[in-house]
Image (cartoon, rainbow, N blue to C red; front, side, top):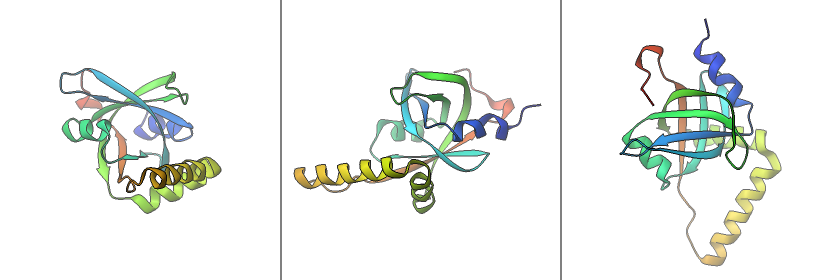
Length: 141
């Protein structure tokens, strides 16, 4: 029998995962994101607090995650999951720096430079925890 750990754990090793959230009318919206994990039972994702995916997760926590390329071309088996917002910035940032290293530093430096040029405040971050949906409660998405 396959456990939640065995279904989510391989996704933690991916450079990118596609997280699919669902609009109010039920249509899917997928986004490639960086992913980290400190536990085989969950994935952690950092994103902007004002993004549409965060708004959709607040309305409907059911998501689908699957490995993908930086452009969103998926590969592997999708996992039905539940997403929730968590307050774990220090942990997520540390794990991202360990996994993405210079890429993370480059993205942060570029973002800071663009904000400074445009005289914009720093974007607020949101942190998403993804856990596998319990077997009996799988939605028909």
